Figure: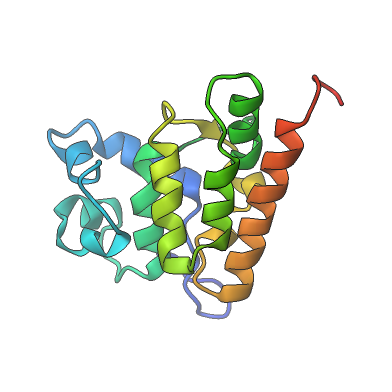
Length: 169
């Protein structure tokens, strides 16, 4: 992990984590270790693939939360936000009513919210979303204010996309 001018550790971007995940996925068994059998982020502590994803660093809660989601979410600079992607899937009738799930994520405590998000993402075929505009960096934070703001962004993006009548509106 890099250090900034103040000597603090800089977080990796999700696109860097996803690229590393994709590179490591070519190894036999890597994807399976981070796959569906992991129930909560803390389960990753006993998973060698987790430490291969973040080599040579002492992982923070951010790392556990990012690794918990990375198998089910791709990054695309020109992609929609996560909330917009989910809202579009519902609006285009590619998924059933997801409002209850989105609100469940938003109301959940920071330890449970990521579990609910992962369960929702497992319903889709690895959506490619823009990590930077999705507010997920804040969502992954355990700081209550940042986490709350990340959830607010997800809910707003979802409802706006769900009710959009067509492109450009």
